[in-house]
Image (tube, rainbow, N blue to C red; front, side):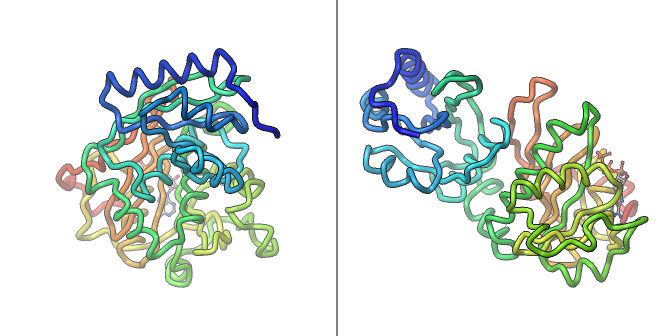
Length: 315
Ligand SMILES: Nc1ncnc2c1ncn2[C@@H]1O[C@H](COP(=O)(O)OP(=O)(O)OP(=O)(O)O)[C@@H](O)[C@H]1O
């Protein structure tokens, strides 16, 4: 795709509006997810002094930086706009470009234009709870690329379900040997028999297949490098001593328990709410909640309520 040499009127108008919103809200900046390549220098001119982050693939990183904008590297993906915004925000936090609690104005291409929509998003309230440090701590057991691929699938499953029906799932990643030692297959395992490279979750086609598998009972187990090792797994890990917020059932208790018993990270998608929760060391470290049917994006701090009376349940 060749860059448009000048910005069209609609794009210019939208950028001006987005910058005004950044000023009015006291936002940390403007994040752009354009459709294709823009004339980055023209973007810089229109946006003036506003801090502008641009989600682009590797090939555009240098050009964006040269124009005085801040590049945020994202993978080329067919994923929906909400997933893409989610991944760009995670990447920005991981690289210390945005902080937890920050409000950000996002301008993106939802329809058939360079840029056509604006949203404002507030990241989790508590700095400690969604900081680059947190994400780096997660990265000690799972490489960031694998984690992002899993969050991508989880957010999509929580938001879209399957064929109009809500779907919940659990994905456990890292420390595979220990996790598998605490798991057994329910019925039969749909990934069995495929070659390793045919079942890597970093591959977008595999992610599509995983969305189908997510409808089945049990957990999906993924290695650090992204290989899906097993699916339809019933996990057995002790829940004693764990504390989770009220209302979370066995899926979430199991997710917490397996991350306490091993160094794995678990991602649970709630069937009832579509909320995605990341667990490490038996605790919720990140929560990504869809806002009702509007499918807007809301990042919130992990729940910190006291343990429910049924804390022995599950697992
Ligand atoms: N030990 C386990 N190992 C793997 N999967 C489990 C385990 N326990 C529960 N699940 C999965 O969680 C599903 C839903 O259980 P439950 O309704 O108690 O979970 P929940 O935490 O309330 O989540 P949701 O919000 O999705 O209902 C089960 O159908 C099963 O697929």
